[in-house]
Amino acid sequence: MARICKLSAVEVAKAKGPAVLHDGGGLYLRVSASGAKSWVFRFQLDGKRRDMGLGPYPDISLAEARRRATEHRNQRRDGIDPLDAKATQRQAQRLAVAKGRTFRECATDFIEKNRAGWRNAKHRQQWENTLATYVYPTLGALPVSAIDAGLVVQVLDPIWTERPETASRVRGRIEAVLDAATVRGFRQGPNPAQWKGNLAHILPARARVRKVAHHAALPFDDMPGFLAALRSRKGMAARALEFAALTAARTGEVLGARWGETI
Image (tube, rainbow, N blue to C red; front, side, top):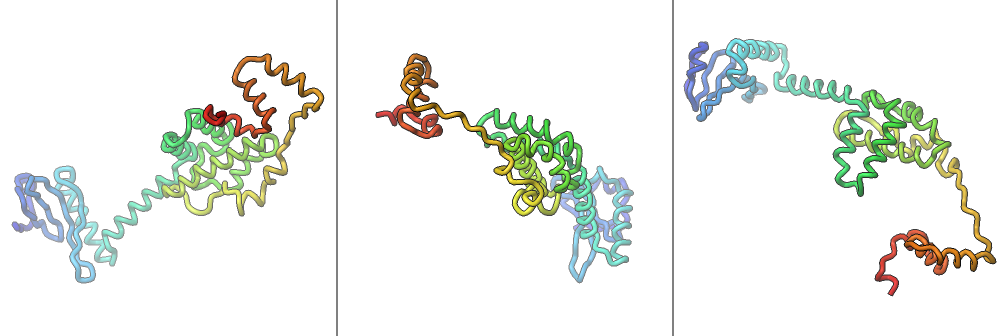
């Protein structure tokens, strides 16, 4: 291991590896066998040696490496661990970025990452359309970290009683996007779009506001005429309806039936 004090710019440029060259004050130039060079600040903490990377040469010049080493020596004199301080700074930067992550950006990422698992393109289109129509005008430009239950209710209130099925789906989609944002570190705390124990105390249950309008029943005496008219019509839909009428099978059973089941 070659060790010299106070490196010159020429010595740094010409250094060959493998070697570790000492500039003084804990600053080292590490040269690999391939010739790649990088700066290292070496210090002691609790009797143990710690190495802190300062960046590659020539991206980081000798003068810049000395400036950074001086800054870290000052931190050590103040009782600060430079590596811990660096980790804290990076975390703060990540949080700053996360705080600026908008709901629209998170929703776009969620749709992109999940579309492969969805059954068809229509499902993705429904996601995009409902979010664009009902959610983005209120939440789209807001940071996901700032979204609370009040804002979610602001989105749902206008459609909760008028379009309960759509409103329920919108709520579930907001919840899914915010759950994903929490997992990725863009927000913290409970999900404000969660129903149980949260919105259930603010909005009425969907079953209470859903307006169900059943089709009128066909009088039994009219059934022969109806079946005769139905049999005169061509197409799979007419045959399926006739089958349902004759067997009292459920709609899902008729729609999902296979030819092999008729044998």
